[in-house]
Image 1: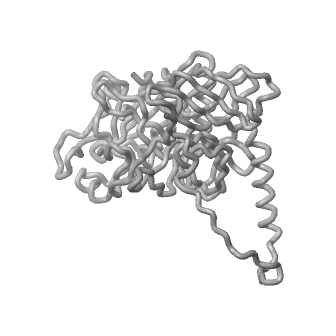
Image 2 (image 1 turned 30 degrees about the vertical axis):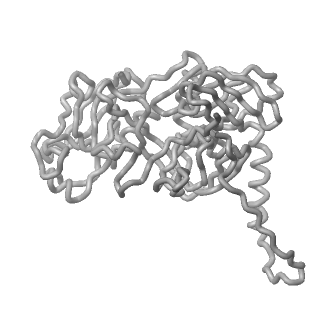
Length: 393
């Protein structure tokens, strides 16, 4: 039986809950049946004649925006595909987009995870089987290869997520609930968000994925792996996850209007390696840190500021341990929050306001083997240390 591959879901249980499994006290580096809709109801009304309507004229700006979105869809949608997979559970659906004329398709790893067979459906009606040639379980990206003539392929342009501004309009095109070729619009709600990675340690602790874009553009199960676009028709992100407020009595997710997309600049670093060697290596520091500090937590820790990435764990033998960075050891009134740890305030001179800033810089700018300078506060004194990044284990 076919089912939708949902977006990775971030279930809202409390104000601080960040995942279905519950919110950790810190972020860490290591930290559908094809049913188009539940019900479609036809509403029949008595037609109104034009003379009964008293509407103001539509502004030229509105008409220009409308035509821009129509044109964007017409030009980009041929490069957006529907993905259907078969696995031991029956099968799932997701979205993807054409990367190049060699037949590489980009989607989420969780769309093709454990797939035994992958079908790629093009808007032209062409349907072919595809093969996964590279996966990135940290950022949740996969590359599928299809063997089709180049004239059947319409690569989607890639933008620059560093240039994305909060408040700008973005467009999602994908396959929500099996409704192929669906276009929705919204804005960029925030940048630099962090979610749990699909990579876990032997102890079961998740690493973190950073540099995500938050959007209120409507995305739902089946949108996974589809493009998030700017109004120039450029991909700025890959739709990955939604935050839910629960489920209905029928078991359908209740979307809060908060979605997350992998930044395209992560894609541009990762995908060439996925194509050439099937995997990508992320840099590793070997720390776990609070996502951010409240004023009362900073006071309990004896810190003079709330900004920065406060270290709560240093992995023995890792780069941070070798460089002498410290985690807190003195118990406070808050479980899992010990005083005496280092507070990272900058990396390579780039300000660190939260752990997301630190992680995003590493993921978009650095590679294993690079040396970074970390500025931190210890005992109310500013210090700096250099360390050499390793590969995530």
